[in-house]
Image (cartoon, rainbow, N blue to C red):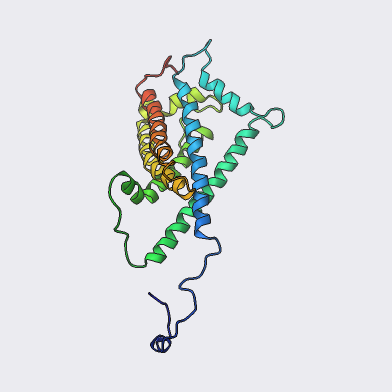
Length: 256
C-alpha cells in the first residue's frame, strides 16, 4: 500500500495519515467519460446523416435541378413557419458547437488526470492491433478533425478564406464540384486524410462510448462490432467516395 505522508515519524510509529492521496475533482471522472460518450455518439450520428445527404450528389438531375440542392433547401426550411428560415439548421449548429466544446474539454481533462495518475510512468500494456493504434492516435486524430471542421465550415458553409472563388451560398452541388475540382487537389487530399483520421477516432471513440455507457456485456458485443467498426467504415468510405468521384469527373451530369 502506498501512502502519501510527509511525516515519516507517523509512519514509523504505525500511524497513517488520513489525508486523501489526491484531491477529489469537482467534476467526477465518470461524469467526464459519460459526457464524452454522449457527445461522441451525437457526432457519430451527425456524420452518418451528413454522409447520406452528401451521397445525393450522385443522383441525376431532375429537370435541371440537382437532388442535393433540393435536399439543401429542405434543410433550410425545416420547421417553417414555426422557425425562421435556416432556424433549425442554426439550432443544430449550436447543439453541435456545445457538444464540440464539451468533447474537447473532456478529452483534455481525462488526459491531464491520466497523466497525473501515472506520474513519470508511460502506459505499456496496450495489446496491439487496430484498437491500440487508434488509442495512441486519439489526440492526434482529434486535432486533425478539429482543424478539418474549421476548414470545412469556412469552405462549404460560410464560403470564406479557403473557399473556392466560385462559391455561391445555397448552391450545394456547384460548391461541391468547385471545391473538389482537379486544380484543388490539395483540398481533396486533406479531405481523404481527415476521413482516415475519422475512421481511427470513430472506431476507438465508439468502442469507449459503448463501454462507458455499460453496453459492452455479452449481449452487447454484437452491437459494439456494428457501432464501432461497421458504421464508421461505411461513413468513412461514403465520405471518401464523394470528393474522389468529383475530382475525377465521375459525378452524373458533371458540368459547372
